Image (tube, rainbow, N blue to C red; front, side, top):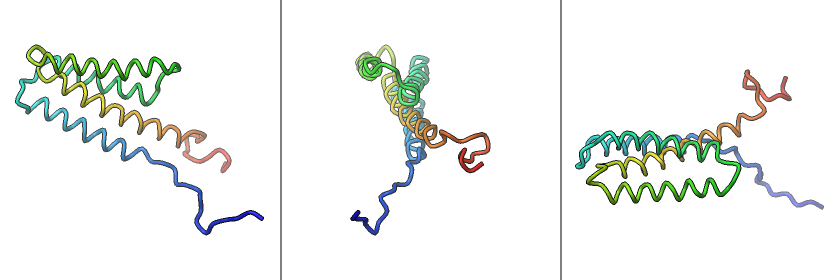
Length: 132
């Protein structure tokens, strides 16, 4: 005889909203640190903001077919952060901008991936195909 518990084991689908909110807060905090921080903001800092967010979103939303490319991107982003932070006299606040926007982008990418998984199999109306 099959044992059943009185609590259902079916879990509620994960929502991407907490990841999206976390990424937004981190990005806003990074932008505020770049704009109003002690170190003068410069063009490389704003370029690093955009590039870090784009790489983080791509890496966690779409990913790569080969695991070694994803690992290379993760280690590469850490190396870029170390280089930018070590040369803060030349690049200003670009190191903080890079790592903050990369982390924000990874959270946004994870939220988009979760949302895409949840909406898989739905048509334009938002109803599941079997309900039609």
